[in-house]
Length: 274
Image (cartoon, rainbow, N blue to C red; front, side, top):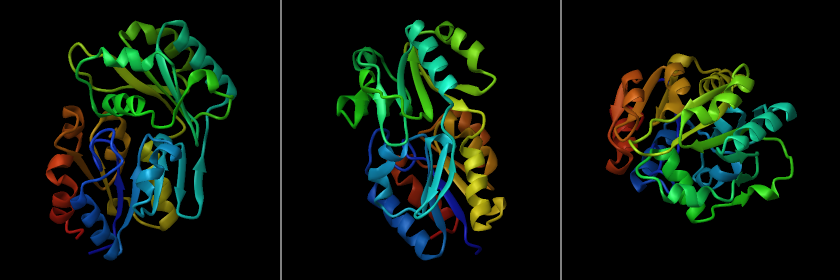
């Protein structure tokens, strides 16, 4: 079997949403696959600071910040923060309409101070919403927005009650950014993120594959939510977790068991990676 280049989303795919600890079965699968010569990258919306606890398991690198910052163990392959104008416009227009924001620099994350209270009153939600709930509840290195010092940003995550709160920001920024809204449960809030059109997880896959000289047909991507869509559409073999978005399942070639049901191990086994 040819060596494969494997990309793993974190929340809802490698780990339960909001967790930094993969199931033991997933770690066994990853180790066995690497021993066979396959390369494994994280492919995540998290910034390097938030994915650092997961990197300790020995991955070959990461497509971080949704594709805006890509690195191997010893080399940065891509680095594309927002411009100052984009950053200022996005933050001001979202705040103007009462949208709750979390912003991600490479090494730090900031959130509106009232966000935790807002989320505590919401029902249901997807893996991204659950991750932010848990991160805020446990104070996982998310600093108050008032401490933000103007350092370069890669992503703005938004949460609000209705689409019309996003309209003015979309009008100003949609030429440069996709407004990616996650699937939401009934009566839950809207949550999503501004994704720079210069990059996405799919473009990240191509950058890493080109770096290692691996054909796209020999890439495999695992995801669970719609912010994995570009990765799923790019890789040679696309896999959605059973706990994932119904829309993403429709786009994927294979459905793996849920992350809580040893999904990665079983999928690695079925694909002949271990």
